[in-house]
Image (tube, rainbow, N blue to C red; front, top):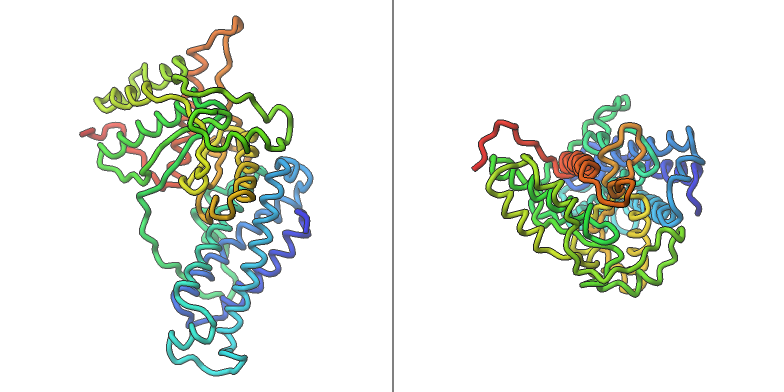
Length: 399
């Protein structure tokens, strides 16, 4: 199986079958309705992928690096396999097929679960897997330059006209989590990643102290090519990088944050409240560090700044799971996101590189001011999109 329009069409065919059966069902239990609703949303995303490939297959696929292409292909294979299981599940229910193929009408939910060879917990797990596929597919559609995907993930297929005769299929509300863990990763953990850690912590305090909701428990940063506190330098040193330029030298680490980048974050009137000093002292005291071997199972979101860093993280995840097993990167954890997604207007992620230096090779405060402003805009986009964050009013009272 290779990644192509034909591959996508094969997967869409299986998803369509499952959705069509689901839309005929009138009396499914709550967990099956949730699966059906999420399958509809997954189908909507797959439709966008089909349109993108019909329009510009070669260019869209060329935007992915080899490791990313392999990862997306694995996602498509998982979607295909799980959708086939869902189709069989819905078909059983629609045709009242019980154990050993006997046909009868289910009188209770317990009978139905037994007949389906499943349980409430198993159905919930299937629903969660479908949602993860949808999120993974959305992330890759962004990398491939598909416009409007962020909005679609939130809205689902609601903005699309429903098929004639299709019944509503509500998905039960899920309580919002407040324990997310995120980490910003750049090569050496002295500038962009540290600045973003600081900016996010400033936004946290501003939000909480004005009475807003905040859903992130941990905010960290680290460097891919840093030895200090790293548990994966052997893997990083031995990775087969897509291009020679993707491999950088390993720094010793334990370095202070870059002064000009920190100044661009703190030496201004932005968030000029008492909590700002405490965060500045915390950031000034930290030192650059490398990656834990548990990075993909500790953090919900791993946020990078360039396509190079995204590709490197995908390769690292694959290498870790090959060495330590699937538990090194559990389902639903360690989503690798390109921060530049949240700056794009044309679907193509913006590369967030270090601020350019002056002609004489010195650091430019003006350029870092602009870079920090760019990253702050992207972080706000991430918070609004992924965390359902509402920006506090500028006139809000800070406690």
